[in-house]
Image (cartoon, rainbow, N blue to C red; front, side, top):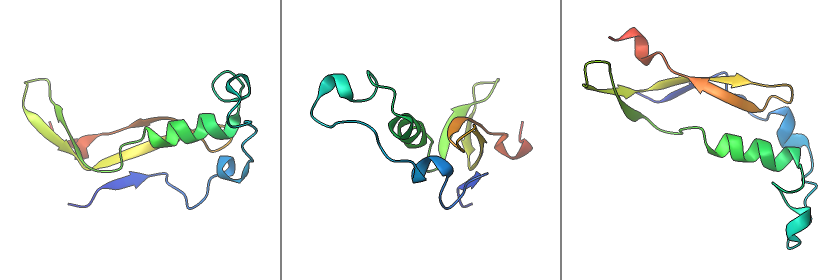
Length: 88
């Protein structure tokens, strides 16, 4: 089965924002300086991009092939969920 990311988009609003960091100056880089682009990029990079395995309540391995993204104000990733296809 192919891996599916629901609520994905070609280009989110945050990707159109400029990075406001001054690279090479620690006090002017994210996370010390609040840069929306860098914060959103870190969140996007943390989203699983391929199938992964979890343990169910009985301790058995199950493969997750589909996640749904939860988006914020700038279409940024604030979380994701999986239902594992309704398998129990």
